[in-house]
Amino acid sequence: MNRKKNRIYQKYIKRILDFVLMSYPDREIYQKDIEEELNIRSASVSTLLKKMEAQEFIRREKVSGDDRLKKILPTSHTVEMKEQVERHIALLEKRLTAGIEAEELKIFHDVLDKMQENMELTEKGNRYG
Image (tube, rainbow, N blue to C red; front, side, top):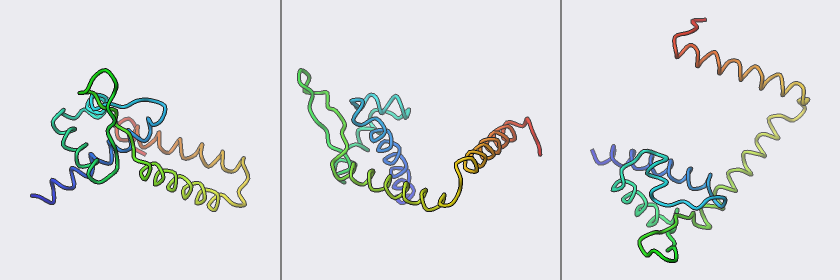
């Protein structure tokens, strides 16, 4: 039971972290934003944020004028990890597409888009191959 609960926590921690990182630094994020965006109860978000803070994924910063309100910010370590992952993805993409012309990549992406659309239609029961 404890292991299952831990997996669920990890799933939600990842979702929260993705949301915070995708919003940072363009938008200030508060607990209420996470609750609404991910449709998670306030008490659950509070517990998850405490875990994330203890693991140094995020930090909370007081907002002037309201001691109860705190911004949710990624730590510098978390931002660096995100940037490192993005660099690795860019390098991998560069390696995978070496020697492939831009027009060939466009055709490849167009075909993938059509295949994805077909899968979505199949899931909805509109097309059966």
